[in-house]
Image 1: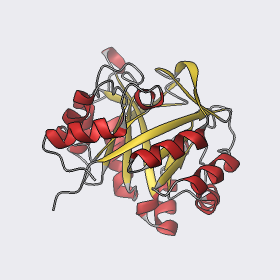
Image 2: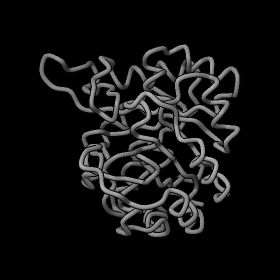
Image 3: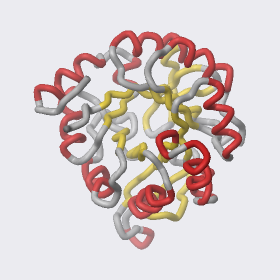
Length: 256
């Protein structure tokens, strides 16, 4: 049986507000995270992803109070990430109401953290967030994609496809694949990146970065994504959840 494609709005939170920019720069306010979560739940989103985008950069933990308030308002799975650095951080977020936890920078620094989280809570809880960008010239990686950290500000010196494969082997339950070059551009998902990661992992892949129209989502699924994630097109009203699901269904992809 083919699983339904999940449509996931992403709340990028900074200073307690949802923000959105282009390539994580020139951020503009997009609203209150709890209110937006409530709207997306009512509109038929399959899951929600809440990313505290400045937590790692500012070396602090995710804002628990907002997570708790959001979890109280929604009845769909909630993934929370940003500043998650230990098994104890995961425990706190799950207690605050998260269903899954996204890990990024801390796992790059110490990959064994992926195994530790999966062993304690089960791999269904663990989402590895990979912020990938294209590389060229002497610094190019084997796959042509490298891992970045701190909202795309720094290179991690890792091949993005190889890192996704390693994390899956360590116990990650899903890959949240963020195409940093495409983020906020609304030019479409990076299909080559999705295809490259799909070829080396057998866990679900969530495509993120670049959604601009209904027509962009089905090709991402064709490339190997199990779920599609978008932010600004939902926050600023260009697209609705139902539009995206209708487009996926008309392209032959099952939706809930």
